Each structure stands twice: as structure tokens, then as C-alpha cells.
Image (tube, rainbow, N blue to C red; front, top):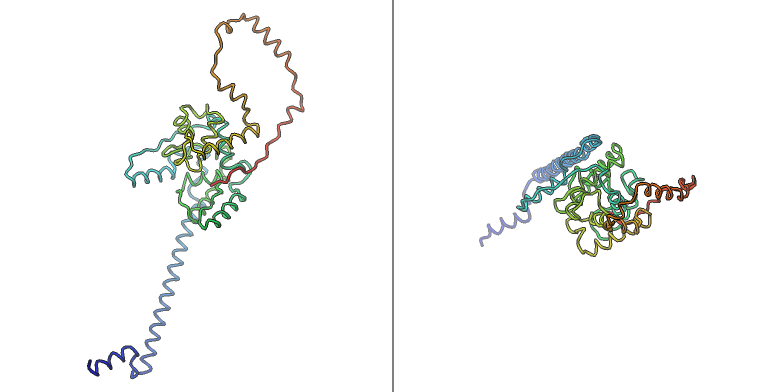
Length: 327
């Protein structure tokens, strides 16, 4: 290698000592100027992103109009649309099965079982069960993941109606805002009615009426306590578990729900057994003289003890107590 080439390489590596001090200063000023510009651009980007995020969250304080749900039944929820898009991306040709029924046509056992399983403080809280949320956060910290369970029925309803099942902080903030608005605008009775009708009970199965017919071949009004307990037991993951299957999870959870219903006096086992037996009354027993029937009825009524005022006053409300860790 020639001496001149070696000298040129050496100058390139170390910098040319013959450069004027002003030229070196200009290079430093140029680097500093570029750094300042980059910082300004970065600040502008952060402000823009923050504004977009704030707007995307803040809009849920006014939209959608949840007050319409007082009388209007949702035709299709965001969760249903999410399922349809999921099937479409997977190349599946499936359709949502959904049917609305009023709360009066739902077995009381279903309402009790679902509340016991999903949100035992439903009637007393204002949308959030802070004890359950704290336990869920502690559980997430131990597992080193972000899931944040402990969702109440009101929170689940907000998610089903307007959001997706994604688990991220932004979605949880939106869910909290919508939950607060639902609780302010709707009665508890209306919230549970909406929830039972839009909840997912299987892959593409939405609403308690569809679930009752699909799994037990009967309307929701005729569901027994044990059937209600089985349906409630699968709500944490209705696409994974089948209410009529032999899963240990379903069996154990439904048994616990049923036991609590018995313990609280919601279910009387002997009554359930009698009501589930087929009728086998002989025709001869039905053909009694009319005067004999009236005589028998009169005698029975006369023998009944009169109900005291003290008895009718003993109708105390059962205490709510958390039973399961909710999602």
C-alpha cells in the first residue's frame, strides 16, 4: 500500500487534525440541531397519540346511547359480530343463533344460578366488585400476566354489547366507563334480562332460550334447578365446556351452585323430585262425585292452621357472599 493511501485512511479514522476549529464546531452544532429536531418531533407524536387515545376512550362517556336499552332489545351485539368475523377469517360458514325472550319467560332458577356463579353481589354493588377485582389483580401479579378478571355481570354485559373479548388496559377502561353508564341508566332487573339474552352459551349460541332448547330440548321457562346450575357453570368458557357433557369442571361447579341454591332455600330437593316425576293418576280416581270433592276440599281447608303475623314477617333477605372467582 502506498504511503499516501495509508495516510488518507489514518486521517479518516482519527479525523483530520488540519481542519479549522470553526469547521469542527459547525459539525457539533449540526448534530445538536438534529437531536433537538428529533426530540421535538417525538414530543409532537406523543401528544398526537395521547390525544387520539384520549378521544377513543373519552367518546364512550357519551356514545353509544345506552338509555335506549331501557326498552329496545339489541338485534346484534359487538360480540356476535366479532364471532362472525372470526369464522369468516377461518373460512367457516356459520351463523349466529339468537332469540330474545322477556325475563318473565326465564326460569327463576336460571336467574339465581347465574348470579351465584358469576356475580353473587349483583343486587348490591354499583357495577364493580372491588374485592373480586383486587383478588384478580393479585392473581395476575403472581402469574406475571395481564388478565384482570373479577368482572361483574354489568361489566360482562358492557363487553358483550359494545366491545371485543381482547384483554388489554384500553379495553378495560372502555368497559369500566360503559359499565358505569349502564348502572346509571338501567335497572338491575333490566341488566340481568339483557345479560341472559346476549350471553354466549356455546359456539354461536346466544341467549338463554337458545341454550335451553339446544342442550335440554325445552324452553327456558321450564328449566329445572340442576339444569340451570349446569348452564351457569359453563359461562366462564361456554365454547370449551358443554352443560350436558361429563367434564369434571362442569360437574363440580354445577354441584356447588346447586348446593348453594339448596342451602339458601332457593331449591327444595324433595319438591324438585316430586315435580320431575311423571303423572300416573288413574282415571277412576278422577271420577269422584262433585259433592264428595267439595266436602273433601272443605275438610282440608278447615284443618289447615292459620298463618300468624309473625310467620309472614319472617321473610328476611339472605346475605350475599362471594362464591366463585369471576373472570
